[in-house]
Length: 315
Image (cartoon, one colour):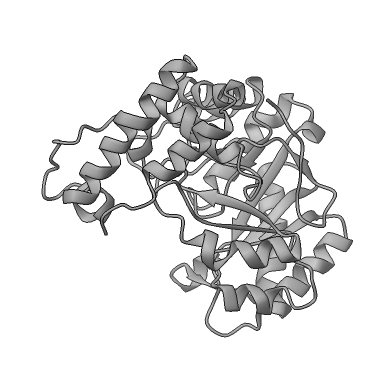
């Protein structure tokens, strides 16, 4: 199943499945990453039909972009959709900066690291405190006219900030938190996006591994672990999520000879409100497994069953 997805008002076209690359070179975010494995993971994704690579300056402070540039050197650049993000200012303790001059410089820096002469999608990664959002986007529109970027995106913007950013109608795509267990954006953002014909990309689609089905309902976590700090991994909510996976998603996965994660990804792919889903991968094997979600076609009833199973989770 490889539909072509048009991104916003732009002429960028992507497949419905991308690769999130925070684990490709993101040494500042994840311990124990190997750069060469990262390069091979990107290649495996491309070899298995994934067309969008979603990266950011913050993933290794440019290292992820650099590794992607290495990985794509042997591929047809025009078959690949590169999305990257910037805002964090290395000269100001990585505080967000949306000033036009700063964003313009960040696009040039990203082009150099990626070893390409255009970026398909460029997102403002986070809003700053004081730059008028339409001015920031206006700077990206000039870069679009110059051919340096092909589509304009914003990430982690509130609805009000998005409306301000889009006051001239230049925003093509929004990336924000959304997954099967946290669908708040369906109420807050999506009505406006659909009205404005802005594409939507959810990040953390597998909820930090929770939606892969690898956890058991009775599992407990060490007090110092990252899971212990997140509500999704605690108490009744964690039990309800793992039970829904075991009782609803797993049987559907078995019927499709697929994994739990592949069925969850297929659920996003079949949602018309979602443009591209971008699960991460640390290894070539994980990238190939994610790509196999393209072969899973859920029935309308299966989509409804999965939606319902996670609808009324304990807070």
